[in-house]
Length: 97
Figure (cartoon, rainbow, N blue to C red):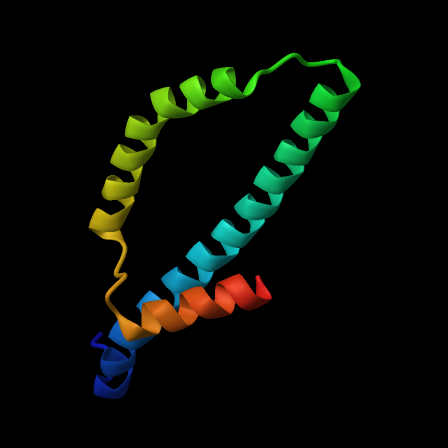
């Protein structure tokens, strides 16, 4: 069983589009969760349930930054971010996600 030539030409265009769409949806949903967590932490600090100084938060962020950069490099190795269809899918995922 072989793939028809018309379908074989569409697969390299459709696959990055779908990957971009999924990445866009994941980024948008993750961003919403991060905003909710930051709002919760701010409310807990203001009400006094949590005691965090700016310096403590900065020190923790600087400790985590190298791991975040390494993870970002790893993700860029397998995403087709230079493909126009991936970028279109990413934009649609971020917009409609």
